[in-house]
Length: 318
Image (tube, rainbow, N blue to C red; front, side, top):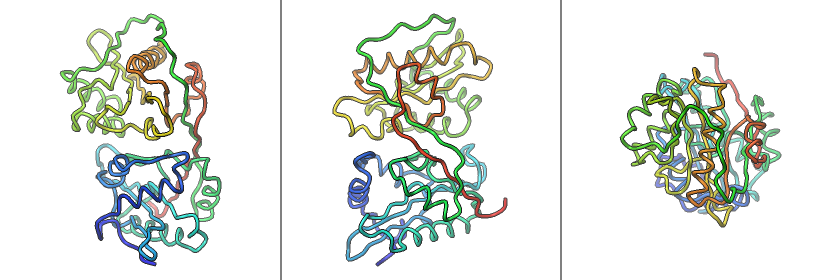
């Protein structure tokens, strides 16, 4: 059995995806495009804490970690993430997962990481441990991880027609490429951190703005919602598992309204606008990922689809 560090040799991308789909593909079918974006090209991937395991020239497991340095992209400092930990079914209960986790934790501690989070990383696959892997929460609990929250993804079949939006004094339109700087300034001021980073990445990859709906009070941007599909230059997390559907999947969110303009019904209006836009673009299925706003999204006909438990572990004092 050979443990190979993430940056030691050319990564066996095809084999990594094959193992994922053998073990997880029924619920979370992955593509090489998505794996490359999230686990190879992501600048936060921590090679020293990421490993894969070979046995008789066959890949049987891997762990992928990430971390942030001080004040990096407005993200919380000294945080480590375990993006994924997977061992081939027939090779489990032999201590391989334990060895992978130990190597990851030791490497993260060595660079000053204080807290490790399961999932929830930048370019994450999961916002926590999926409920479809029922033994994993207990496995991590035995190794010092503590449950801190539960979140869900929501799903609905798209309506056949666009639906009427309750009138408000704001306007809602697709973002134009010419509004890029205005929008990024708004994101920096109102939603610094992950959402700002994702918006910057979208435009840096050639996005033209059409995957964002902007809410405006006169000429001021006061809110946004994202409408994802596979035509976006960046695969959004609410369409990661599009291969589960034969017809076109659309993703709604994230959604944000400037603090000074909240509690005026603008969030409800802009989500309905996003649903209408997805319908107009031919989406037959809609997903909202990683949310605790159950009642809000259920009011639009969404139902719980996938559930996750969120875990953390402090490995040293700050």
